[in-house]
Image 1 (cartoon, one colour):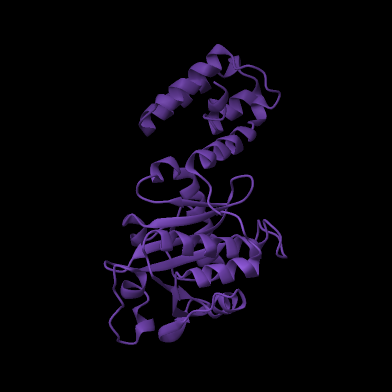
Image 2: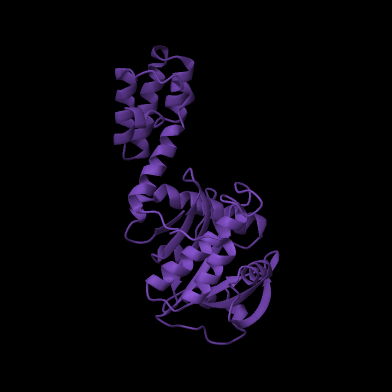
Length: 284
């Protein structure tokens, strides 16, 4: 399932974005060895602060398994400001009808082999279909994307070969990088759908995505409350106080009070309240 997160709805999907940034850190900082900025396990750069659109692939449980970023080329973007070596001195291509697609990544650890649903191949094709259809519906005619030779072969095998390349192939971390051009035509999308045997609408509505994400969070029961017993009034009080805490000082004050009343709780309850004070929130 494909979820599009942009400047208008990103406040609804902050946890999804955090998962996406963590996936990017594992792929680009870890597996590919690119020189990227990683803080708190998340890979975020200056272009993420320009309100780009993110096309995000979710599995059946709501986990982020694939993602790509779409950014206008009329302003700062990676090919012009970071990967300019690829251009070999040429001016970057800029057009209101051409967007840059970068940070394409797939979770090869969570996904399976083969071509069935929830496989690497399926998630890759679904993400490409979602990206192309999103751009086409937004009036974008072409995509320019920085890829490595492996992704270039994936595009060719998937009936989605670039129609041209810009600049040269240059070293980038553990792998070379190149800039490829893709049109957002119906012919390209149809060829990709035929290859992947994906006929349905790949997009998930915002409301359904939110419901699925909430259900996934609710299923992660705290060990301290795995027996589903109702919360005590005191536990509910601490949940409310922690939720209302706006600063780190206020949060620490609540934790100190929990510690002071440690005899009131079982060891399991105390551990949960100290380490994951929001663990009971969905049951309060």
